[in-house]
Length: 560
Image (tube, rainbow, N blue to C red; front, side):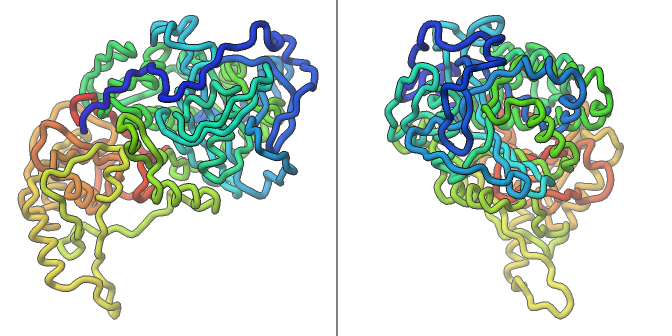
């Protein structure tokens, strides 16, 4: 897929940015004891805080999942004083409703921030291109299941075109007219995060309970507090736009490099928002794994440092502004299994009126939102074939077909499998179907490389693939190691790559395009050191994304 020529700090198609009212709002100290002169519309009522144009970090999602104890029992009043709050829902047409029992239903929290480029992080963009409010640089909707055993985080591309409702600024009283269609990231400039909440409520059919917004400083300081976060890239990256510079393989990033990894748009994939979202999902998953593995939850001094960093850079809705509310929320998330933490991207396609923008892919997006409203488990494992010729996939690639990992274009290419019937069960595929599938596998050029650090893995996997009908499977040498197993494909081989990945039990998120490849290549990583089929307790199906237990690597721009 070609790079989409959209500047990283461009203005949206329909700019909703307006200058703030001079002198509006109290200072941070005054915000600790605000005068209750505004009632937020929607599910919750609230007080009027100072309006602040904060910047973005997605990192708060991961910390909420694992650092609940950080808020408990340690200088609570001091942490309370760090927080700022704003009304939850600015939809001028929404009517207030009674609170529902959050203990017995799913909870939704919107995590976002702005792309304002002022202050210490101005070098990551042009300050002249930003308003005081800015636009949402990242928008992630986190849903916690009713039984508190699952977490789903849905990312929305910032150039997604949606209807923007009429919103009223809680500070200035200014009312912003509704837009039939505008970029979702521009809603933040129509009075604050409550307008973004209102817009997402409308097109998802959900009723968001809370929001959080944090600034760039939280990324740099938090990553340093954690001692860095491991990330992986398939090729060396040197992106002058973001300042990201990494060698191929695994690196530990913190400070400015952690921020650059999360913000780069032109460094990954096809240069679009989907590549950046994929990198953010990978970063957050890595952070969650690190915090859990290192026992951070039992290190009280370190936990306090994390809590101090978060609350100093955090604006929340009025109902979430009390530290006990944060304690209650985070406590519920501490014991969620990593395989039940799903990061997915809202299904999108090019916007009909402007292919440089995106729109929701109606059928797939509606299905996702329906499943969220029904509190369904998106990680439930589906049946897949075993590596034998009789379990051949029936998927066939169209000549010249190509795609990019993490984009909705590949959703229709997910293979459908026919498993070997058990004794006494009716046959699910004819002998002719099996023969045709086996013949199709025999036509696929497959190369297997070992980057696991365990000798002989390429030979074992190549033999298993040959037995499964991939008679062109060969081995090749490779230097270095990779944490995760990946399946790369050249132009015209996406369907075959997905079918092969299914045979080996490799997750969809690990199937990625490679511009310089003919056929399919399997790189066996550190997560596949035994056996001939990977095992996983989760599967996102046709959704683009990953679970927190999956280790993923990013491909540099130009390799898609």
